[in-house]
Image 1: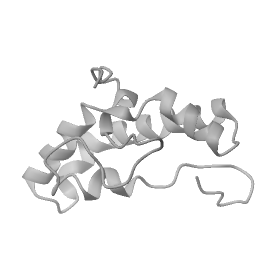
Image 2 (image 1 turned 90 degrees about the horizontal axis):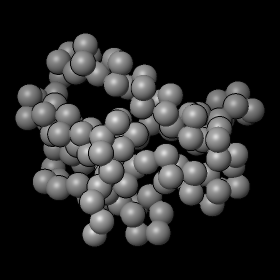
Image 3 (image 1 turned 60 degrees about the vertical axis):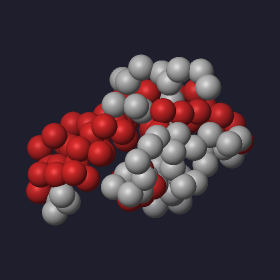
Image 4 (image 1 turned 90 degrees about the vertical axis):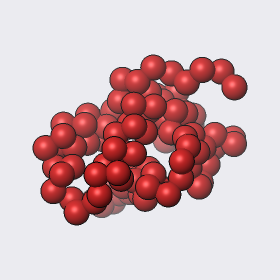
Length: 112
């Protein structure tokens, strides 16, 4: 979370979601979300609520901000992806991982 105006929370950029995709051939990120969860397929509204609770932030606010961030990303990605200077392979890897993220409308991950 970042508070640019010192009052309203915003989600910080999800650097790990993009930067490791080109190099890691699976669903696991370098850093964990919480409690050992480190898969793209773990990124759900439930996880955002848990993170908010752990940070003592309003759960609904964090979940709404998470949804809004994902909706915005998904609305601009199709038009901008080819103009970012990344390889087609990286773009395809990002798109593959987006299909795993429940917040994008993907189906929840199967139990481990």
